Structure formats: C-alpha cells, structure tokens
Amino acid sequence: PYNTNASEILYKNGFKHSAWNTLIENRVSEGYQLLSERGIQVFTIDDYELENSIFINNEIFGAENHLATVPIRNNPQGRSTVSGFSINHEYAIFHRKTDLVESVGRLPRNDTQNQRYNETDENGLKYLWENFRKTGTDSSRKDRPKQFYPIVLSGNKIFIPEMYWNDENDEWDYDLSQYHSNDIIFPIDSTGTERVWKWGVDRAKKEIAHLKCEIVRGRYEVYRRNYINDDGKLPGTWWDDSAYAAGSHGTNLLSSMFTRDRLFLFPKSFKAVIDSLKVAGAHKESLILDYFAGSASTGHAVIAMNDDDNGSRRSILIEQGDYFDIITKPRMLKCIFSSQWKDGKATQIRNKSCIIKTIK
Image (cartoon, rainbow, N blue to C red):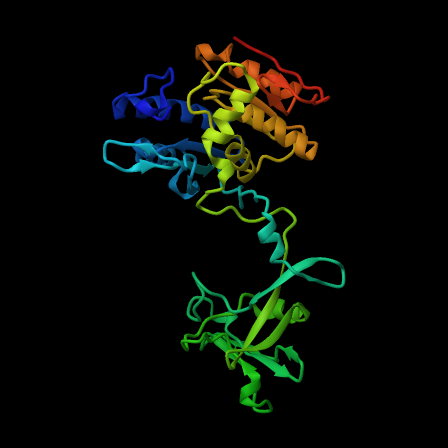
C-alpha cells in the first residue's frame, strides 16, 4: 500500500504517516523472520512514503544491508500532482537478509548490448576490448598502490617485468634501465593523474595473453579482454525499459486475460516484477513470498520464469481483499492454463501441470 489516493486499495490509503509506518513495520518485521538468510526483499513504493519506507527497512534489515533504491519508469505518460509535476516513476528498494548475499542477480542484455561483444577467441567465447586502466571509485594510486606498476612493450608483445614489493615505501621496486622509456607504460591518464590497473601483478602475469597495447591519440593504451557473462549484465540503478510501463504491461495484460476492464487499479508491469525477482536472485528452486499479492503479478511472474528456464520455483501469495476471488486466484488459474490471452480467451494451451492450494 502506497498510502496515496492514486493507489486506492483496501488498506485505507490516506493513513497518517505514523499509522502507515506501524502497518508496514509490523508486516516487514514478520516477513523478515520468514526470509532466508540468503534472501533479498524487494519493496516497491512511490515518493509519498519513500523516506519512511527506507527508514523502516533499514531499521529492520540494517542500513548496511540496503543494496539499492532503484527508480522504475512505470508511467511514461505521467500522473499529475498538486505540485504541478507529472509523476513517471516509482521505486524498488532492495534489502538483503545477511551478508551471505554477496551479489545480486543479473538481467538479460538487449541486442545492442550483445553486439558490443564483437570479438571471438580461439574457444569461440565472445568478448570486447576495454581499457585496462581503472577509472572511478578507488582508481587512484594512493587507493590501491599495489595495482600501480609498469607494463613493458617489446615488439608486438607486452609483459610484466620482475618486481618486488617495498613495504617501507609502499610501492614496487624494479629495474627498467634496459628498456626504452617510451616502451614503459604506467596507468597514468591523459591528465597526468596516477591511476591503477584493473588487476594486480599476479593476475596480470597469469592472464597477459588477454592484454594488448595500442596507440590512441599519440599515447600507448593497454586494453584487456572483457568476456561476456552468460548470466547477463549487472542491474543498473535506473530502470526505464518500455516494458516496465504499468499501463501497457500491467493493465492491458489483465484486460487481455479478463473480459472486464479495470478489475484492479494500478497492477504492476509483469516485466518489472520478473526483473525484480531476477535481481533478488530467484533461482530455479526458489520460494517467493508476496504478502501484498494484489492482482497476483508476482505469482504470474513466477510461472513465466519457470516456463522460460524449466524451473520449479514456488510462490506464496497473501491477500485479504475481496478481489482475491475476482482477480488474484482467477489470474493464477488462467496463467497456469495459458500464457497467451485475448479478450478473456486463451489463444494457446500451456500444457504444463501446476498445483494451487488455497487457504482461507
């Protein structure tokens, strides 16, 4: 429940903030107890209760387990407000249960992203060349002194010279007197700032075949092979795919499955739920709990994910609204029967078994 008039549901939107906070804190606390030690919670909300939502979840999970707050462009047309701004987005807040969760799940790349990996090695693996010099956070020499070392160019090959770590000076000792200064490359950028290489000395020596040197704008640059990850790309912190639009991929999807329009106000985009589950690490054997089930978007997403990778994920949906018998349960029955609907009729049969148990 978003606690706004724009998201009318049975939980009496318009609560004072304190009452809403109590409602959410009680339920998130219970959900926390049920969550796996390696589990991730996804909590969606809009601007009206964003700050309270982050505070409550940080209190329960710990601020150190707040992985990200991701804006999702779920309403490209916009929703008018009294302030004069048009609201185009909501947020997905990701919290892990413990530090046993070392990374989040990956998302599929689109065709444009896949085309960037336009090189193929001797084993048929795809990769692209990227600069070996590190940029951004922790990229200066003082941040990672052991990753500041010379690379020597000899003919068409490069190698890492012998060197020894000097604890007193916090730097590498080496003898480069036999090499021409033009053939010695350090991770110094075009502004003269001392950066670092992306790998340490040992790994660079081990994977030297994955490095190359080129002249770019009159200076030597070292590049490394960046292999495509078959699991996909790291999720960004801004989701703006057109498939995240709640109207075309939420409301319209429900309209195709049922003969009546507007059975449920503001259903989430089916694609946004799937990607949220992927980022939360919903592997083939996962059990997913949604205790504000609404129109059963989460349950539908779980069925679709199983169809996509032959998984056996299970979902538990909890809902107390009258629309449980009108939309929540019927939608689950329909998506089990078929993945394609038009005007309330299935256009193909799914031909896969599934068990639904209803407890009241």
